[in-house]
Length: 598
Image (tube, rainbow, N blue to C red; front, side, top):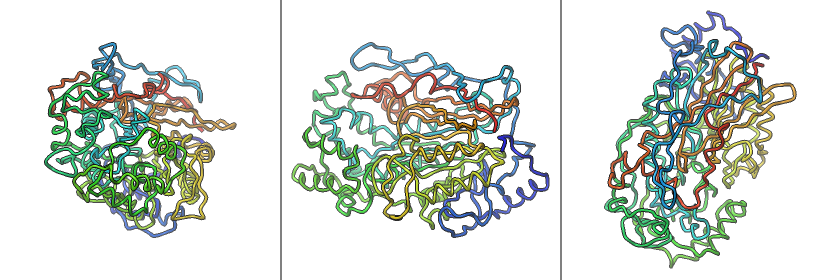
């Protein structure tokens, strides 16, 4: 099958338009939005089928409606690409050489053409038409930094297990929303940005407080990023422990010895009310391990851990030896259900400090996560459910597909494993559903979204809800995707690093895997992705990285929402133990990724 889309008849298009306008689409378990981005509504009753089974109706086909005044979604490209507001124009860079390094304006990152999958042909700039353009957020890790069920004390063995900027994740994420809202279309083609997709770890600790903040950041609103005592912060940063940066005091903690500043009023500012304008685009959501599992690694079900999360005690320090043992158990999946972790907490009951209990810190279930997305209060510019539907709630699935444009479908996978551990996989039902979805829409290009990368899908322990179902690794997903010539890209996160990988089969079928750095660790990025037809037998996928809208320079006296967002970036750059390679190489940043049609 060629990657050139077959032309539908005018009558077929007219019927699809009528069906979508009437809301006549039917959803199935694992199947998501009935209408395409930009229309802001999900319509249709759900038809209950088993996960992975064929849909009763085809919401993707029914959603293939045309925008008012458009004759095709393949829009002619703009004659004037832009760089303003992207990392092509400039990137935050250190302006001091040692100690705590202050940031300022640095040079941009040039675009690199990658030709591993196809040779770029001269003159393509003038021939291109746009298939779609959108934005990827990933690994926002919105953190309730006062939550009892956290692992800050692992810093006694691993400096980067706790990061000095963790109290500012909300301000940083709002600034990223503001950046997207300021963009005037796609940087290369000038085409309209159709939506934002978050590829998981939207929250950090599977906490209801965090998911509420996430929904309000994305859809807009005022809220206070605080839990526990509403009068003041209660956590490691006012504990007096020298293991952590104590910003409000002159205590010579370990971070101040490295040059971190004393900022009076920092903690009060961090938990002050914020306002998010919400995205001026529709947005979709993909689930990550930190969204699905407490601490991103432990299976649900332990009543002690659930009660500890909302309780009035918090462990803030642990010996290096015990921390090393706990970290080893997490990294090597020796305790996926958290039994040893629970026993460790019980053994240190007398070492815990008192904090204010708060029911809002309770872990949320997959169903509660879906219902938060479906809540009308968080619809924003849509779509209702942000990809998820009541069919997902009924079937207990968190994967779906949706129409990106006339020529492109999107597929959001759930690569988390409810059995525990932070690496991923997918079950047989989902793998079959993925295969069928791609076959059913072979006349459309496809972009696949997930949280985990292909290399981090090696956790094949059974899902407790489906103990007899086989789990499948990333290599198996690659083999399936490369067997479908309509797959252009697999977009994901999880590793907190920019990495772009070509995948191909002996018969020439190919796609690009695009992994993007997080917005919690330096360099705190998101990515604009543009799909174009070069009209010469090749396609190109353009990737352009963006930073938040916060200024590169910081002012320790500026504790406004914007000032804190700028400080969020600078603190992340200086975080002890930070991996300074997460920006990736030039070939993983701003790129043109060429591939053959068919």
